[in-house]
Image 1: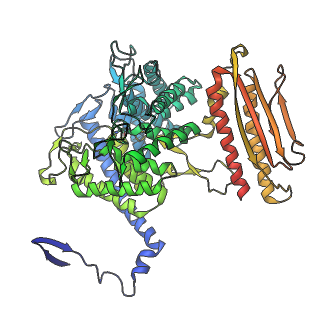
Image 2: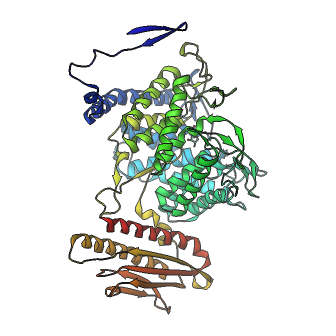
Amino acid sequence: MVLIQLSGLSLFVLLLVGSAAAGDSPESRFSSSRTASAKRESLQREMRPFVKAMIQHAFEAYKEQAFPQDEVRPIEGGGVNTLGSYALTLIDALDVLALCGLHDEFRRSSRWVQDHVHFDIDKQVSVFETSIRVLGGLLSAHFMYEEGVVEVDRTVDDYDGGLLRLAVDVADRLLPAFATPTGIPYGSIHLRNGVPHGEVDVTSAAGGGTFLLEMTVISAVTQDGRYERAARKALLALVQHRVSTTNLVGNHINITSGRWTLDLSSVGSGVDSLIEYLIKGYMLTGDPQLYKSYQILHDAFAQHTRKGPWYQEMSTNGQLVFPIHNSLASFYPGNLALSGAYLDEAVETCFATHFIMKKFGAIPEGFHLGAGAIQHGQSGYPLRPEHAESLYMLYRVTNDVAFLEMGKEFARMLWTRTATRCGFAHLKDCTLPPSDAKHDDAMESFVLSETLKYLWLLFDYENVLHKTVDWDAESDGEETVPLWVFNTEGHPLPVRDEWRWWRLMKEETKAASQCEDSVGIQGNANLDGVDVDDESSLQRRNAMAAYGQEFSAWSDLLSSRAQFDANVVPQSGREARRDTQVLRQPDSTGPVGAIYQSVDTVETFDVRFSCSNRQYRDDFDKLSKSLFRRQYDFKKVDDL
Ligand code: DMJ
């Protein structure tokens, strides 16, 4: 070690010469993938037990000190009810117990929830917080059983769907909040009586637009489309109310008039999970309108709020309001990584955020970008998860050890600076050294459901959540997608292909008399130069057969609904219709669908469907687009 004196400052420089074995050149040390994998293994050996011990420390402290109250008081001990008085931390923590292998604790705790929690209570709660923490927590815990993450042990818990029933009950109690002129929900609801008399008609963009994941799953399992429709309408209404000159959304909106009441736009507080649910909603449902909306908002934020690696707080017409990095914006790199695009942008911002953490030893609520200092009055660190979430998402996407190293620093910071006898405590002022640290006596339930869970998943490389699926059997595994998507409170929900279809498939048939006008969808698939004898052609035919099944399901469905028409027009190619089967609706004059069971020669065809029932136009539009998205997969098969 060499000590250099520089302008009165002591600068320690560690020189690592001599630590490498003779002949171990920098090239061989740093370029070999073996080194990266050895590093990965050693980080896992070190950090898995470390993070698991933190999870146990937080959970046991909560159980001993606070249960069945909502949250633990990590300094004084004891508990406090913060949101509903129904053991919030326990509900929020169920899935992390399952995911880190504490299965008996998971079984006991979920049994307790089923036996003791009910929502027919005299409580007014936040619609947003109840959805992300309670509904999300219950759903995710249910799927820990249903997807086999935890085996049902009948001696502890003879599970028969009780968590799901509770989740549906919560969703039912939240639903009345969405009955507003814009479809954007009220901010709070009385669990027994519905929307409180005189409830204010202003909500934040995030608070109004963060329901689609939970509600889609509820709709799928109940086969009742009301939940998803309400959530989707609210989310898209917020996007539609973006300011036309910049495409930015504001922070608070009037849910009656659709007017922005707080003209402040950023990817941080007040807006964050609105953007998040566009891309995650797309991952769950395959709805292209969500992806398109995500791109529009992404481009607007990139153009108007991004400066260097940071996202600032602007007015919706693009004027700078606060040159601040808001700590909630730290989730955004991970979210960008999920989109499959914008990776450079994501990495750059994640590294910059980590710089703040290194500078202050934690991420303060507000960092003033101009002054390079903590924003006055925003020096606290309330144990937020967002940076850990981004590190986890970016590591899954890039496999780069750098994100593990940063995760280790984050975990050590959490332990060193915030652990207390009864859990983990909010840091009041990041600038004070650990010995002088001052804490607030609070540990929010997201510490277990998000902060510690993301750290655990970062280092638990083989976790069951990391399995991916290849929906397209022909793609050689190159098109794999995750099987789970996280709600904004860190609760994983399964992604099931059939859920994209549930809404139209399961809803009850409506009468033909409501037909009014029509909407058409056009698409085409290129299958040029097909030679039936070669292997790639076989692949195409198989793909086409699968496509035919989709057509079949689709037309079955739509044929039960009045006034539906389809036209299949080959644009070129010989004998295009040779093996084509055209289905006709019994009491209709036109064909209702077409199945291509095998195709010898089809170059391009054009399919035009029309649905004449106004009531179903949105559904039709969504499903049609999803169908034509499959054609895109086709082209990929063609490229093989
Ligand atoms: C969590 O409750 C959720 O992540 C929410 O979307 C906003 N942030 C908090 C934690 O910081």
